[in-house]
Image 1 (cartoon, rainbow, N blue to C red):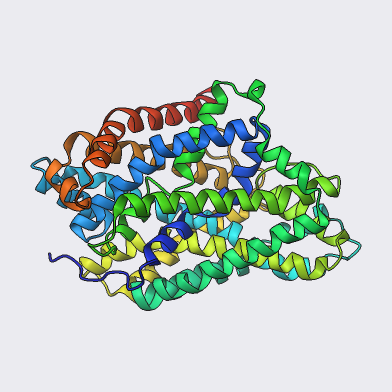
Image 2 (spheres, rainbow, N blue to C red; image 1 turned 135 degrees about the vertical axis):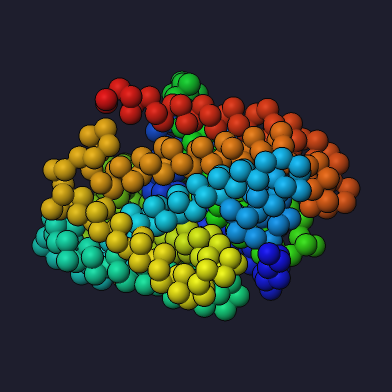
Length: 450
């Protein structure tokens, strides 16, 4: 099987694509709240340290493995293992990534579909109905959720079917600048209509008295999950990276952009939350309930609301296409089926699984599956608590202990000896241990619920 010859055309495309993969709904509605409730600036400093110790080394490892092979994650891991003189069974890590991507897409699409739905709902945010009632109405109808879930999955299928250059690159090069413009608009809105100083204090004023061992574990988890590691997306995108791009500088830029957008999201949201006397929360309630309530009382809220939910929808779509692409790339390079057929077939599987997640909001709301969790929660547990951390940990172990030094040195640019030595130390001794800590910490509540 030959290497693929497809590479990103634009100099910034990999950075935008990888940042788009990393900047998802969880990052926007999760990071700011974690920062604000775990010591503000103290948490941000710990998080940045974790990015350097966990996120950056594993991201570089995925890019090195992907670009070297110029194949999908399954074959990239296999290629790296064979070239390094170890068992090709390391490709199992790639298979785990493909499975993670499809499973995450299945429930992520349901949440992203609600974002699409809320573009219209927020345009009428001045109605008498409360934001809690509005959210209940939007999610109580399985038919409504199914419609928007179908729309979102269809967008992913369409983009992926068109290919890496005509589909992914073209869409990413349009969406990411729009995302930046919209988030700047929302930050300016927070400065005008929100309690901006309180929002700044909430996120950045360091309170080391709130720092506990749990704070470090939370920062470690955020650093790992926020960069889309452990599921093959970065490895797959790395396989399209031109040979002349510097892996270290590019990875650093992606991590920086991801963190910047997450911080800007917090500055767009929390000043508004505080100004309107709403509860500072995280997750769907923060954006679908609290923010909608604020828009209903805000000047020009019926215009700013749709802008906000378009922003969320773009962030969701830029992430989701990176969930589907690794599996489609594998089917395409193995000549099992054509790319469009693979996109439709795998997208349909994700769509079908997503029905279980959307029913968790209504008809299956009383059904439990794993450790007392509903279907959506169970899918989240399988992927975020099991597959992704295991994938990231084994990528780190493989890159640190088994991947040929020759491969790494040749993939890193000339004159990067210091970078190599530092990377080798962290990927070998630090990153796998820290990811294992996150993995074990996340499993503790599961065993407690058994």
